[in-house]
Length: 232
Image (cartoon, rainbow, N blue to C red; front, side, top):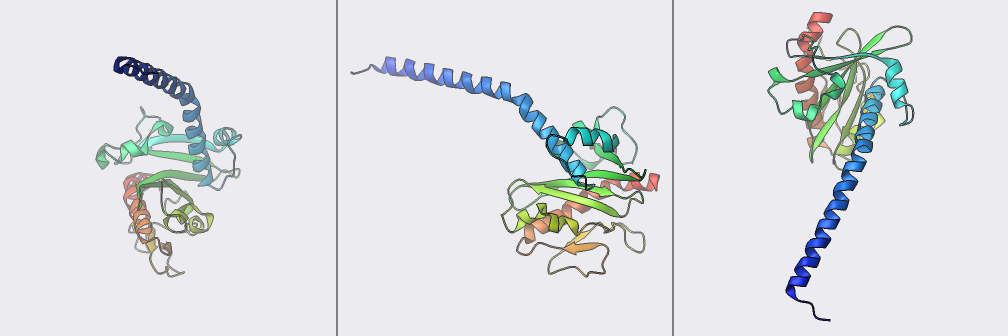
């Protein structure tokens, strides 16, 4: 059967409208579930940086149990009372000047009463953003644990930043040198000296991602220096 151009145009318009309406409805309906999944994943990563294992089912319970306090500081190391640390989006914060950013701090309290301070980090890898959380001992020098993730680094190369083997290298490393100068933790191509307390091995074949992670740690941790000085 031949159809007029008007019929075809009307039919196509109606179909596009119907499909768009269905997709819009689905997006609106699913958004609360998507937001909840993002929240749970963030809590899992925060806990992972202090070596607390959890699943999607118990992440919220363990987060409430172990993360006793969270707050935001500014570049001067002063607390910003009007901002919820968990609601801070580091992707948005990194677009601001360093002096205008909000810097979240999460406080983990171990069963023996000791505290660890968890800090978010975010930077650029080879193919996209990289991010993670670094937990510090109460001396604000020694790293207790670290977890990193990425959007699209190369499998087997840069993507290795999210493996336990790579992340375990940061345990016990320090961000200040023997002269009490901030150095962060360098990610060294070709392998770090095992006795170097301020360095870890880079990823073999993942030079750009390793360099990005090195820069991420330096750029992000230095913004907490005034807070560290005030609370050592």
